[in-house]
Image 1: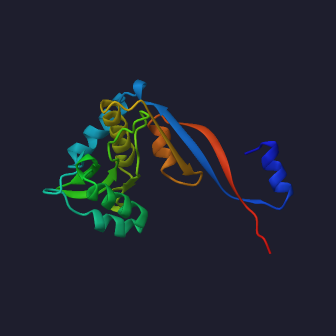
Image 2: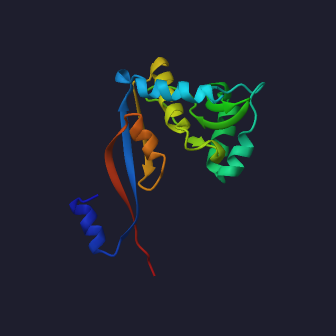
Image 3: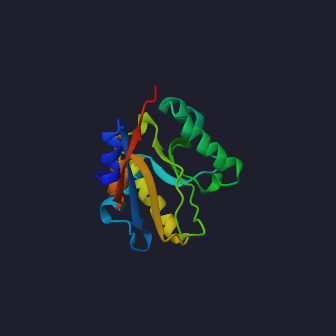
Length: 182
């Protein structure tokens, strides 16, 4: 992005089809702020809690993915469950109904905290659940000996607001370039 090579490609009929941003956070310094703790407490008063998924008491993953129309999230969660990591998924729930997910809490050998996604059911959006749930993932990842988290997302992905809220910073931006050959 904005390098001599980038401009060379543009001059040779490549064009940008989007931007990806690489995010990073040092989890060794991560702390849940009072603002986050207060938002969690406020949601708990209304019956919304953030907890680990337990297949015996929680339901509604597929209904949430249907409402979101997001097969990638469905696949990521079903893979985590199939691989025995379902119990490591953080969820937002009310009365047992799953209204959001993130995780699983997994630390890679490099010390990197893993992320398969973050999503909130449309009927539970605008409560700060995505932000607080992702912050809880960062905190739980730190407790699980993760040293950092990195991720990539499109410049137009609304989840970037969640990542920025949690303290992740954009480390690098990339343009996706394409050239049509005829």
